[in-house]
Image (tube, rainbow, N blue to C red; front, top):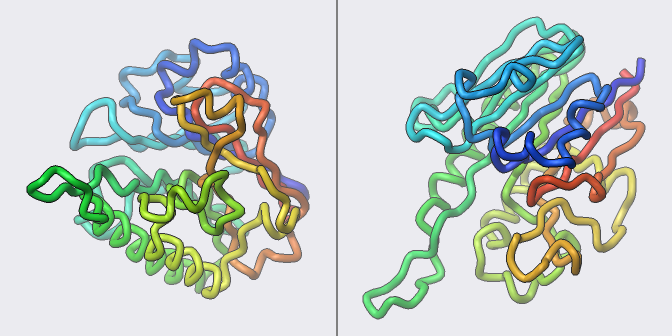
Length: 268
């Protein structure tokens, strides 16, 4: 049975739903749709966003700050179990992760932390360190440990905004960003290790080293029009599902957010 899964950082669900590009969501017939950076609690959402015909919906909102972070999943597949956030209390509260257990795999929809603002020295100059990078890397470690535990039961599918461009091919200006969070060596090294653990970057698995394929563009300086972007939105699957991968795409034509949707098709 072929199933299609989609992931989209909407950068504010209440804002994006008013834009023409959000028709993609209403028209989508994907089996599972994961949204990130929803920036809303369920109570703040219009009924048309709380549910989608033929789907069950699940929301994980920030409890530490209103209008911040947040994730949502709409699914036509029946989950056996649903969990929110990571098991470690240190990484709870920001609404960054929803875990659905399906019959044949564990599914994660994640809005992984970014590195935050640069730390400045007494002269007001950047030190090369970023305020939230330690939290970001701790979150990734906690997630990996959790995924590896669940992987003993059945395979893993994880999608979302990872806030990391893995290789120079994954952003338009790698040299310019060598010292910026999202492309720091320790961030990229995590994805190296994640892949060595047996997790497959499905887009690269399907398309190889195709260039100029990005999923996020800064709102500044008309970056999207110039395709000066970053590929930071992914679908990874554990290698047990390698022979189930049918297709993976980046839907650059879908507008409305500073990110675009990414998709994965499995024959499972």
